[in-house]
Length: 593
Image 1 (spheres, rainbow, N blue to C red):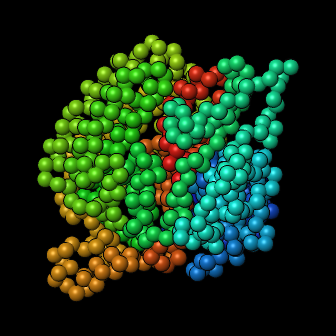
Image 2: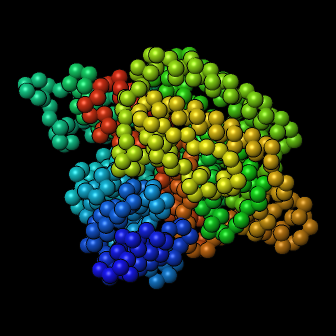
Image 3: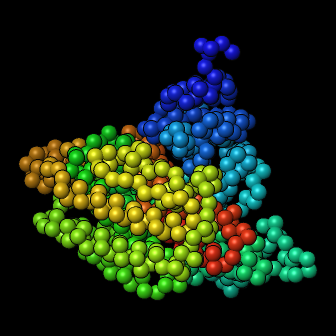
């Protein structure tokens, strides 16, 4: 090769378009279409028989796309606006992420309803296991070669695939529910654990293993979460996470709610995150609508999101230490959360679930005296955080239970799709607020705390350090809150101010349509990722030119974090498992949606 001819790998490292060109040179007609979208990444349609080779190529590039960030499906059968895209009844998409390049790429494969099957990519990305099970569960797409293609969110006895467009969305569309004694026995029988079906042996060297259910109702399970443990004494030989007990069909609900009326549902995904859940959704909708919000709105959103980050981390810290056997910390952290909620309630009128962000702004302007209320909290917390470190993280027993326990590396984290504090605890400096600033985060001065060992201790200490940085960000919001309006002056945002509605007939008509019908957004696709309390949370929205989302994909951080548990805990001990569960910081609504 001549000096002036770049290698394909060198071409793939230069610019966003070069990765596409490199793929076209390498795979030719296997790249069937490049889709224009508002996702902020290349979106390529790939021939089914070349999918695994394309994925392997992208993964194995220098600084390649090591993380399978998301994998899901769209039922295209009722979609009206597809703008010359390849024919498909179902589209399976793969969102790949490169930490070193700070870039994403999305691959799509179109499937006919009569042949809805794909090769499993678990040999390329091991964390595809749960995602492929979810796609089969929700859409009925088969993945050939999957190690165990079984229901994951729905009960094993469930009939049908709920995210298909021909599946009912409302309870009134179903027959009345009845549960007979025989039906109850069937459901109970289906929940019995069969080790052989998971490739597990019942005994070794003549000694039987114990199979223990941890959960679904156990304090250390942090919600309705079940772990079936294969034990040899205290040693964890293997374990099987069982999720779905908290599944409420949030993505299905989005198909029958207007763009505005779905906002309160987002609060309940990570129910400790409050308005943090609103943020990726409204930002993704604003991309579809072409709305640019005022600087005051951006700053208010950042301030309230960081306040909820502190509230969530305080809940984590109390329960994390409680799992280690310390009872007192949870009372201290809940006292501080109460102070945070007093500020939240004073500003929004609500506590845990304000549903306060709006498309194009926030629900209302900051009330009189908000800055004094917030400053009181900012003055209170620093000494409390230092007290937590002295009394808890510097405690010899806590160190003994957490240092070098359940440790994993950055490579392990990327392999399993781990993000947020759990990734940064390994020493990986990747925080979207710095790497891909959104909502004005580029205007704030703060640091990204990092761990070193990726163990239970680092995951706990890191969140204390993150709370300090959140306080630093909020202080800048208090000191430098911009003047201006609390919503964008745009016809697709929240209803216009009442005084204007009473003066202009056009504004009155806009108000009426927004309330009774909701905004109509042009057909397109958008994506927004944010650094949420537990890791990266993203909303991938598909608009079909209607008042409702055609498809809302909610990618949550807790889902992959739980999938990693077996690989990390094999060969460990039950007390270490309990410590690790506490250090993950998950809630089951964030897992099950």
